[in-house]
Length: 364
Ligand SMILES: Nc1ncnc2c1ncn2[C@@H]1O[C@H](COP(=O)(O)OP(=O)(O)O)[C@@H](O)[C@H]1O
Ligand code: SF4
Ligand SMILES: [Mg+2]
Image (cartoon, rainbow, N blue to C red; front, side):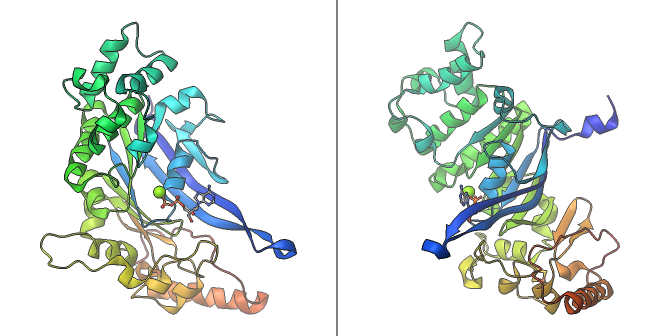
């Protein structure tokens, strides 16, 4: 086995991009316009690790998850399974390897069926029971700490607590022996008192079963608790990515700093609300340059004009922000842009590419 094969993530999305086209206006004036849901977002999911995607509602988190699960097709970008291009379409073998857990466990379980039924179906469809269905169901329930299993197999979803329902949804996902678990806001609809239990279950599955887990959340505090790596998304873009500790101890992007400042903290009497610093933009009318610039306390001229490049802050830590570009380079970029704008007339730079300037770019 080559070194490259040894370190290949189980699942990787490179430069994933998705636009949803919607109708705007009426009658003869109606036209189809793109919602820039996700643009050039890369994410890697490694065995035995939790990667979190954090961002406010509408940031594009679920769209990334659905692309990774092949529920929707990216408009651009690449999906790699074990370092090789993922198969076309959504073959059953892919669906079995990459399982998704949704936000609302009540909606994802059929109210007229008992727990046993929910677990037997995937076992049978994917031929996983090996002749002993009851033992396989009991094993699944034990793996999600619903014990003793006999207390749960005959129950209907409404007879379970929210946390127990989410555990059944996780058990159902585990039935097909996935290698990747995509958990889209799995605790946001649960009572605060039982959230920790479900997060600890995900941590257990990572450690005991070596699953590659994508944990999607709007709550950066829970990402810090659970994840090994955190990716921060804002208005369809990846703005910062780093090992969890590095990102939360030394956030480099002003948006990550804002999220952290609004996270609940037992040492603070009052936590400032995120909304106090405005709201994310409409994805139909994005701000030019850096999409965060209307809310950013550090905004500069260049931010309004040009998309910030992705900068390497430290090992495995990147941020897309002009603050981390050497001032001379920043000025050169702006001069180049102004020269181009003068020669070609005004341009919309909202969608200009964002190359990586790398390590030689310094903090101002
Ligand atoms: N099927 C769809 N059709 C049209 N717009 C969509 C669709 N799915 C998502 N969107 C839009 O894409 C943007 C990103 O959505 P989503 O990925 O669900 O964000 P998040 O999960 O971060 O809240 C939102 O503006 C949302 O309204
Ligand atoms: S690029 Fe500019 S506006 Fe955007 S986050 Fe950085 S400093 Fe703020
Ligand atoms: Mg979502």
